Structure formats: C-alpha cells, structure tokens
Length: 116
Length: 113
Image (tube, rainbow over the protein chains, first blue to last red):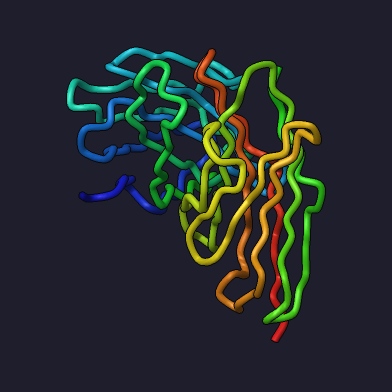
C-alpha cells in the first residue's frame, strides 16, 4: 500500500500571498488531519476531515482552512500569509472509524513552507 | 481534558546504553497512547501504541513502553541505543470521545559514539 503523500514538498511564498497544500491519504482511509510543526510551538493540530466534513478543529485563525474531496484527498489553504506561518505542515491519515480506539494516524513527509 | 507532558526536552546517551524517554498524560477517559519518532526533515513514524490490551507494549526497532495507570505514565525504553536512534520522539494521547489527538512537546534523543 502506498503511504501518505503530500505535495509540494517545499514551498516559498511572500507575505500576503495565499498557498494551497495537498494530501493524498492511504487508500481506504477516510480521515485526514493536518498539523503545523514549528520549533517554538511544536506540533499543533489544525483540523481533521472525515468523509468530506470537518470533524475537529484546532485553535488557528480563519486564514487556515481546508477541505476534503470524495476520494478522501484533502487540501489545506492559508490565505494572507504571515512570517509566522513558516512551518512544516504535516498531514496524517487514518481509518477515522467512530469508536476505533486502535485507530492509528499515518503521517506524510510534510510540506516545508517558508514565508519571506 | 487531556494533556501530555514529556518530562525531558533532550536526552543524551552513549551507544549501547539504555534509553528512557519519559511521558506523563492526563485524560478524562481511557486513552490510547502512542509514541512516534521523527528523523530530521522527515514525517512521523509510529513506534508503538497502547489501546487497553497488554500494559507492556512492544514496538519497532527494539523499543517498548509500559502503561502505568496509577502513575499516569507511558515511558519509552530501549535496552541498547544505536546511532540510528538519534531523532525526536513524541508521546501522543488520543481519546475516542471528541476524536482529539494531543502531541507532547517532543524529546530529542542524542546518541554518542
């Protein structure tokens, strides 16, 4: 089975621009979660999508948004980029089944976003 | 509310000596607990997980962790460190209720030759 893939792997943008990151989950997985990783804040949960619906959301401003398509692929969008948005953005997929205490998240390699 | 505390931000060991990475958790419900490893510029890889079966959990690469409910701990151990173990390790707690996953701040493991 192919793993979680994320594109692009590296991205450089300037302040005020917007960016879209893509994540393709493991085949059969219906849940996709997004995380932001920075040296100062560590790994922070952004949001989770399950069957095209946002099921959970972290404490990030509305500039951060996402969506999930019918094939479970997910995109994350950040508008009006700020310097502080520079980070590694990780995507994780899981079965997402309700009540699945053994549900495990499998992570992609991440997208390194640099905002200049 | 759930939370995870990794008690050491950095741990340094010599190759061939034991590794102990400490993790305490707080959870209102019976949690699932995980350890992930992240090598530089890579994604996270699952080492092991606890989901209310055996309290001693064996993972990949010789790592294991013991769930101690009375101490609310889930420490990660390995009998003998290898240079390739140098990485950052994350303890993670997850509750079915709310589907929320919380990551610890991470422990960076250094292995000296």
